[in-house]
Image (cartoon, rainbow, N blue to C red):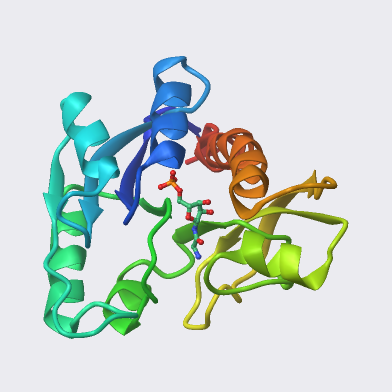
Length: 198
Ligand code: GAR
């Protein structure tokens, strides 16, 4: 039997939310059999929350606590609670800038995916486009991968290559990578959400 029910997504992000918008538009266009149940951010004024609210979606700020690179354990427990209450089946990290720890990893095993702005395993961590420029790379790109306890180390699902062009600045290269991200991330989610045998 096939499961035609839309895959229920929970989206986490810390930034302007352009990847979230690309996913939401692909859902609206009928290209992904999914629905966004909830959007959460560790940044109160993040664009991703504004975009989600503009679409009438539930969108909440989670106060991150005292750490810079991860959520306070209680805050991450709250994230798990909200995702569960919303019936989320797949957690999508769309520009979420903190490490994922045990509460969330254990609640959604192999059901958390992330987009990263490089061809992993090259240039993990922050501002990967700057790392690519500084390394003199001729190509870079973006990667969608399953999330594990490491930094950008989980199994790769798909990658898209992007050239580094003469005269590129950090801004022009990141913008070119983002165009690739906005195509790749919805494609991957569409495949994961495609009618599954139930
Ligand atoms: C994206 O380029 C994404 O790959 C990157 O943050 C940007 C978010 O943009 N994520 C990471 O670097 C995670 N390590 P957006 O808020 O416009 O989607």
